Length: 258
Image (cartoon, rainbow, N blue to C red; front, side, top):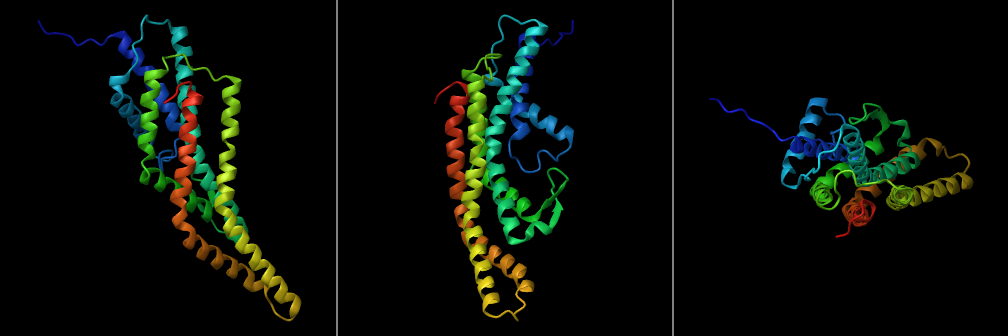
């Protein structure tokens, strides 16, 4: 008599809960090209990560009803979104750097298509986001995201995560990393371009016959590119410091330590 394969209902519930947590984390995790990839590829990626975490799937006992299961799924999605949102601050910090630097250097007039959102964006912003995406993998932060997900499955049972007002406030305060890190990276460019503007203004004051307006934009663009090339070596260090600070605060936001 042929045997029939059966799957326990508890395993199905555990799979759905872990899938909700992983899918929520992937929404904001700054993986290059993930948001622009086809939907089947993203679904397969989420399913693959969920299956890879099989040894850590929670034991769902007793089995919840459909209403309670829906509440648990919302809680798991909120937990995953919290992880992805905090990690996504890294890419947004570099995007802020590109926005500030590009505006001061005159690159705001040069726009191209953002491969992630398919929307028009400035060249400096896309370049900064690309650098952030490369550093995300070069520094092994994708492994840290997997470690956080695995650790959360061990310490946070299904449906136990609650996005309290205090936690939401801490996440908002943590969002200030975007502006502080972006301004920290852009300050050398802004300072150099300010000196270029002052030099051109003094030359124009000394000799009003000089047509310096046509030289202002090329000079600022070349100066910004030269300084960017000179300071590119500090990007990994700043990115690593920012990432360490964010990952150190994640356990407190998720309600576990270590």
